Image 1 (cartoon, rainbow, N blue to C red):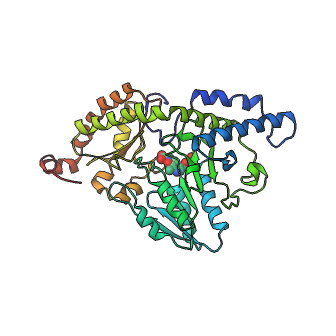
Image 2 (tube, rainbow, N blue to C red):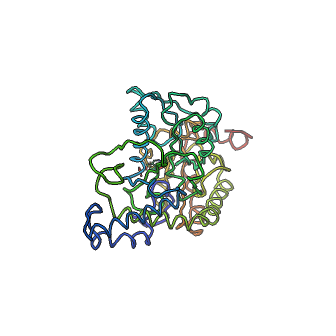
Image 3 (cartoon, rainbow, N blue to C red):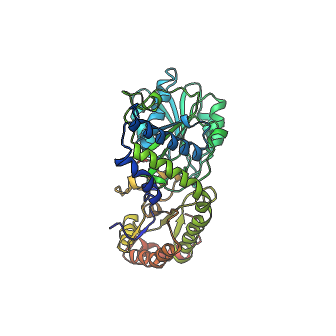
Length: 399
Ligand SMILES: Cc1ncc(COP(=O)(O)O)c(CN[C@@H](CS)C(=O)O)c1O
């Protein structure tokens, strides 16, 4: 357990050893409460503010005090939705997409039964959304537009800066759900009209259980968590100091590895994709291949079950996921594949491979060595494949 080839980095990542090293002193040497005015507390407060600067630097935020530390992206997402409604009592509409993570979708559906009207942008077969359709959904009652910057299943990158400009022109607060974008693509918030942005540390080699919410100066804000003056009164609760220090270090490292991720790691992802397409018939690479995060590959293997593929990959010590980690228990095709209109026969067999800076070429070669045999064995057992293969192999068809 815990050994082998890890290609599920969109679910979570290993903590970078340099992040662990940075965190260690804050467990049993510098353990004061940051709010304490004695030496134990002041030393810790300085460490938190250094981490804030490191996060702000990766995000291209104009001011470190625009960063609020939270427990995770889910808390950050909930806070963005909460504050947009509580600071604009005359507005009760939210515009988002059908492609969002459940942290947004489930929160929106919870609210839609309680006086909030939610409008959803649809997606085309590549999983892309249309800024023109987005603009049509905005109106004076729109309290928030919340759009993900990159999709966790396909890696699709959305035109968030352009959509934030449109929202600003309509006086609509804009939130970017950027969990899968931070540390993977360049982000320069000060040059955008984005009001709020969420992300989680455990997607970029920080520990699980720490995240942040960026809130642009001038954006009206009401806390989601009350009962303390921490985070300048914007997020109550004693700070998780070691994890905040770890998040800061992870952001600094992510910035220094951005080029490597977009060159070497992207090339490894492309090698995996080409190898699969060239050796396994009847596959669909889902999503928008030109606007995609450098580390993500989502492939639909027709007429086989994604879960079965994962189990057999796991036999070889290879870790991936079907859809996202949070939907992996369900045998239903993911809401993302459904929103894209991927046919059921393919949507059932999707596998998400997500690489990281720790991925090696030898690992990709090993996946390419074993995967064709796995798919063939599963198809040989599939009545559905055996009924359809004559038509499929000879047909020149679009899915
Ligand atoms: C776009 C997006 N938004 C929010 C979250 C939640 O992150 P937390 O740190 O758990 O709060 C995630 C985490 N997506 C994981 C687990 S479902 C995946 O396998 O895709 C995400 O991708």
